Amino acid sequence: MQRALSGGIPPRHVRETDVRPSVNVSHPRFVSHSSTHDCSPSFDRPHRWISTYMLVGAAKECESVGEAGSEHTDLVSSVISELVAAVSAKEGIEFKEGTIERLAAYTDVVTNFPCAVKEFEWRNQYFFDLGDEACPTHNGLLRECEEKGFLSFELPK
Image: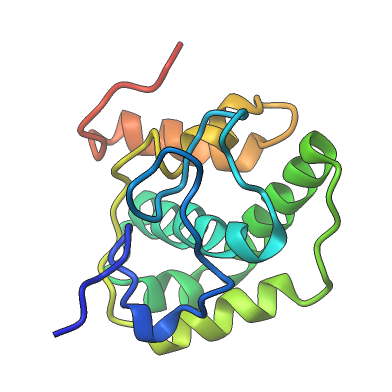
């Protein structure tokens, strides 16, 4: 039996170069602290996928990430573009073209995966902390989830 990586991503769907442990972390996690956050494009890919598809799906009350991707394609694309631009500006790295398509292709593999916003500090907090100017749509969706009572935590003020 394969053990799922952080965020429930089965290892068979993630290349070794996509996820690698951060310093002082015993297993692959998406660390929100800038001193240990690995923002290399290949590592950051699953981080962006989880932070986008799960958030859009939860905010729009989708049953699955597949539904989030098919019913809210423009919103998903907008959030992905926003996160890529924000990380590029903050970390000074460049992402290859085709990010939206690569993340959509992964969603096609796990189309029935349920949506939820959880493990905030490991998933969405890094982007939330970049601020509303850098991530307005992402942060707005988090606030929408909070208003609807979909979060098991309080967003930082």
